[in-house]
Length: 212
Image 1 (spheres, rainbow, N blue to C red):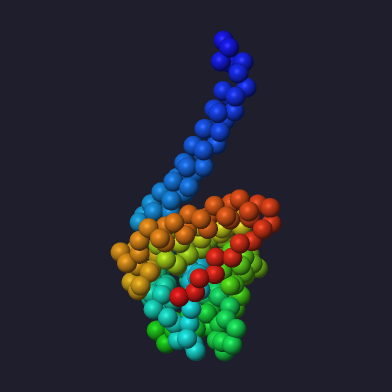
Image 2: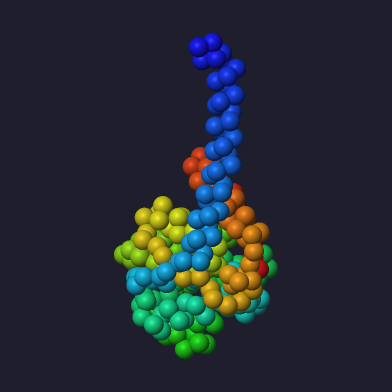
């Protein structure tokens, strides 16, 4: 009975609970990042969007090219009737990431009439806001996000929060393919998701810009 009245006992219990939450929440998110990366399945949608990655004078880097190749496959298999590419340019670049993606898709025999470059976005959140704005203006309701496998969970969450039905189809090749990445990518995405869901709720935007 005395233990129930001891304020220090309750303080210890509260601190233990807080510590448990601090440990369990990141572990849960990391598991979701992993599971989504390994089990992401696209569904037929209004559009495909290629998340931006670095380009070199209009030529996609291997990371971006792998995403482009996956988007081409999805389009040719009839998953969506159009492809949006997203991503701004870095300081001094003549090409945006979105333009480099469109250029590569056109060279890959994808009709220019189904391509739309969204030349905005320096990181995941700003890119998502940019392409979702275009989707809403056009009346598109659903999207397949093409990105790296362990990026899918956060990319889907952001699109969903902005009112779009989103699935993901991760790149199958390239240096960011799932068999070539490790726990560092999962840790980074876990931190990025938690930052988005916590600091982001207070209007604090922590950029995850990490161009390859």
